[in-house]
Length: 295
Ligand code: G1P
Image 1 (cartoon, helix red, strand yellow):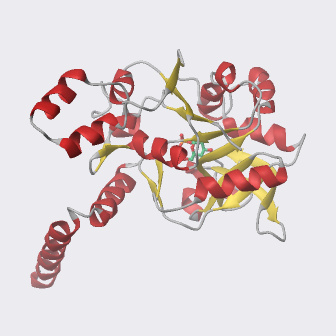
Image 2 (spheres, rainbow, N blue to C red; image 1 turned 60 degrees about the horizontal axis):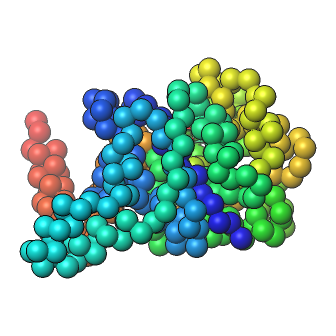
């Protein structure tokens, strides 16, 4: 059973500048919910109730989002807006711990900051840039594989050859149960050096022995302490597994991926979908006719 989850959120969000100059990228909304709330709900749907956010400078809005908002709640109560009040209040009942990463030294370093919170049990890591379809059971599946194998598990996706440079890439072989036994992991390799096209997506079930490795691990790609490098060392010491995800994932850490996620999630939204679909169909018709009317 996994009781604890860690949400690294100290990154600078440079891919979304200027929006992220003074606001956390984790608070960018997909339709009406900030990215980090999707990840938090995903963990809680798996029964994980001890949540740690690794924060940094300019990240106060995340703490405020999950705190009580007395004036807002009071105003909504007085206006009798029960549904909105419920929506706001349900966020106040989640217990969070926060640890500040003093400098953006990489994902590996962010995970090391979680050591005093995690202590000695296996734990989940969720990167809120990677948004998983809320109806999917990826994290629950990973938790049961980790329990069965008594080992760390990372989520994998088959990525395009030109995209291997954006991911941690694994070398491994699928067992009879379809789960990959990982031999080696490389952080963001050049396409010519990638051992496969199996990229790590932002869901991990880790074991506390990762901290021993992270404590002495030198900086890797981009001068940052890389979780992928730590997992690569771990894979030399004990079995590490990869679970190939076939469901829907949105890379909301990238502008195009963010736009795709916005459109698809809006199309799934009960209230918005009909009107939004009509708008998109109209837009496509206009695009189509302008394409055909060009000389
Ligand atoms: C991080 C990891 C990378 C992983 C990716 C998944 O990179 O370092 O190994 O594949 O998350 O989203 P980032 O996207 O933060 O640069």
